[in-house]
Amino acid sequence: MEPETEALMPEATPAGDAAPITTTGEGAAGGLTPGDGLPPEQEARKSAVWIFMGGEGLRAGWSVAVFLVLAVLFLIPLGLIARTISHRFLHGGKGDFTPSLATLQEAVSLLAVLGAGALVALIERRRLLDYNLTGPRRTRNFIGGAVAGFAGLSVLVGALTMGGWLHFGPVALKGAQIFGYAAAWGFAFVLVGFFEEGTFRCYLQFTLTRGINFWWALGIEAAICLDLLLRSKGNGVWGVYAVALLGLAPCLMLQLRKVEGGGFWQAAWVTSTLFGFIHTGNNGENWIGIFAAAGIGFVFCVSVWVTGSAWWAIGCHAGWDWAETYFYGTADSGMQAQGHYLTTSPTGNVFWSGGTDGPEGSLLVLGAILLILVGLLVVYGREKAGIRD
Image (cartoon, rainbow, N blue to C red; front, side, top):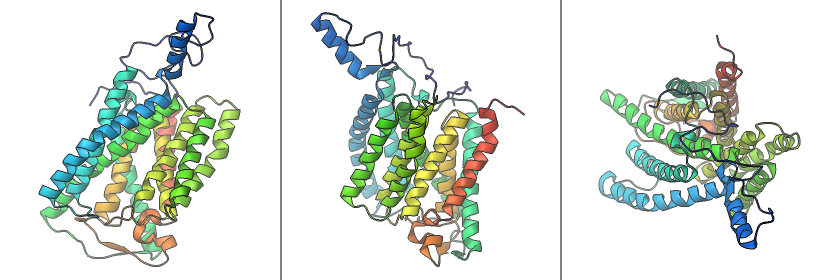
């Protein structure tokens, strides 16, 4: 673990070991701006530099493009290795959801993201930790997030049980199996937290914050919705449409009023919608589950804002998934795990029970997410405002 440092606020220029980049104006890089009345050859070179370089180095759009290409290039060979391991040693079949298979899949995805992020950081002359992984009290925030995730899911399960929409069966594990599967699933979901939050709340949130405005955000949102519309991904897509629509007016207001730090919330709109978008590929998802995924993604963005890093979000993500999949044994985004502690089954109206989607597909999940958000702001909001007990 790195030594504790001062919080890196999302709207601030990131700290790191990089040499400072001198600017002489908005969108400039080292004072190179087109239209300075130079000879044609020099003017062409400066224009080319201006297209790719901004006041903080490589422009955000190019940075994201390079990151995605590198991630795919890493993922192809790593994926081939993972499939070989899965077939020869783990005997995994299509649709299997075991701790070993989940760990392998998430490890491959995390390695691809880390490799891409490390190379982009080198290009941008940053540290990998500069992507929303610095900040004070990282261990405390990670543990606090894990507790919040477990507590939020527990409240949701409790509400479903009280309403008669979730029934408990017998304990599924005994003896040493309880601790073995608890540790195995715990490790798998920590990897999930690092991979998904590392992609969305670390790299993408940080990078988009420094280079986005409302119109770019609107264009990305429109592209996401158009893709879903053309591919007809099922009823779950309405959750994405709802998030895209809900963020429209607030983000436009931030743009028109030129609110300081508005870029962070424009980026949060995009990364939250993207987070819901990637969940449309899961089996058994409904529109509430997709909307909830985007909603908790926004809460994770808020956690970056108030804590100065993504460590709370990583912990909360892992704690929520561990409670849902292993401890209570409910479906997780439509997938039922092997090796869960308790046994539960949904009953009644799918609108309230969540059906095959699990608790995340119940309308009550929105209350659980709101509860987590309120708790986050109560505990960490005072620190964001500079108030200390």
